[in-house]
Length: 571
Image (cartoon, rainbow, N blue to C red; front, side, top):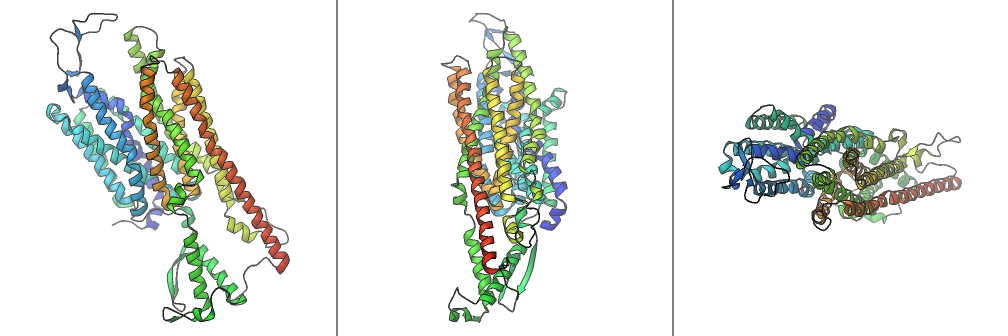
C-alpha cells in the first residue's frame, strides 16, 4: 500500500504543503503552554488541591497588608492556587523534556527505518493525547493525573512529526535548504496553535469538543501519511541524479549502481585494459571464488570497495570541527532564547510601573503580542533557507569541473564549486543570525517597555533562523543518511545545556531582586561564542579552495606530460 519513491517524488509538492500545515498544528504545540494552562485551570485540572480557607475575600485590594483574610481566586467556577500551578507545570516539564530529549533516538530510528513508520506512530500518539485530555476534563477530580500521560504523548508525537518532515526537503534538489527552513519555521510557529484554540474556547466552544475535533484531524494526518509517504528514506539530491540497473552477467557482477559510479568504473576499466594490470598478481586475477574473472571485473570491485571505505562514519561526523562548533553555537543560542522565554513575564513585571492591576493587564497584553509574533517564524525562516541555497543552481560538483576544465583550447566559463558555495552560504547565514542574536541581547539591556516588542521580534526571528541554518549546514556537509542522528544529538545536547536557565532564573529572582540586567550582560558575552562557527567555516572554505587549485595544477601537469587531458583510453 505504501507508494514507491518515484510516486512520492511526483507528489512531493502535496506532501510539502501538508507537512507545513501538519507541523503548524501538531508539532511543538507545547511551546504555547501559557494558553493551555489557562484552559486546564478553567476545566478544573488539579483544582482539588486548592482548599477554600475559612476567612476569605473574593477580590484583590491593592496595597492591603491584612494577614487574616486570604484571597480566593476562581476560574470558570473552579478554585485555582499555587499548588495547582506547580503540579500542572510539572506535567509541562515532562512533556517539554520529551519534546527535546527524544530527538536523538528518533533521529537514529529515522535514519534506519525511514520516516513513514515514525510519522504514523507520531500522529497516533498525538491523537491519543487529545483524547486523554478530553477524558480527563470529563471528571477532573478523579482523572487529572491523565494530563501527565497526555502531555508526554503530545511531546513525543510532536517531535515525530517534526523530525520526519525534515527529510522531505531531500526531494527538492537545490531548494533543499529553503524547504528545511520552511519545515523548521512551521515547527517554531506551532507555538501559536494553543493561543488560537484558546480564542475558540473563549468564544464558547466546549473544551472536550475542541479536543475531539483535534484528535480527528490527527487521524487525517495518519491517513495522509499512509497514502503518500514511502517506506524508504528520502535520498539526498546527490543520490537522486539517476540510477541504472546494469546486469554484468558476463562479468559475474550484478548490482545497482548510480550513473556517476558507472562512469568512474568504466573509465577505470579503460585505463586497466590500456595500461595493463599493476594492482594484483596475474594469477590472483584469473580465479576468484571459483569463477574466472576478467580484469575489468576486479577493477569494478576495487573501485566499489575504495568508495565504501572513503565514506564518512557517524563518529567521524560527530567529532568533526564543524559539528562540534555547531553544538557550541546551538547551546549558547538556546540558553539565550529559553531564558528569555521562561523569565519574560518577570522581566515585564520589573519594567511596568503602576499598581498591581495595571501591571497584570500590561503583562497579559505583552504576552499576547509575543504569542502572535510566533507566526514570524513561518514567514522569516525561508529567508535563511534562501541564503543557504544562494546561487547553487549555477554550481557544479568538483569532479565535473575537474573533468571539463581542460577539454579545449578555449575553456568555457568556469562555474562555482558546489561545496564551496554551500560553505560560503552557511557562513553568511550564521554571521547574519549571530548579529541578530547580539542585537536581541542589546535590546534586552535597555529598560524600556515598548522596546521589548522589538526584542520579541528579534527573539522570534533568531529562533527560526538558527534551527534552519543548522539544518541546512548538516544537509550540505554531512551524508543524508546521518541527518536525523546528527540533528537529534544536537537537540539533546542543546536541551541539556539549556537547563542552566533555571539557576539563572533563580539568581535573577533572588540575589538580583528581579533585575535581569547582569544576567543579560553575561548572556550577551556568551553569545559572542556563536561567531566561532562562521570563523571556522571561513577557514574550511579556504582549505577547499586550495584543494581545488591543487587539482587544477595537477591536471595541467598531466596534460603537459601526456599531451592530452583525457585520463582514460578508448576501448
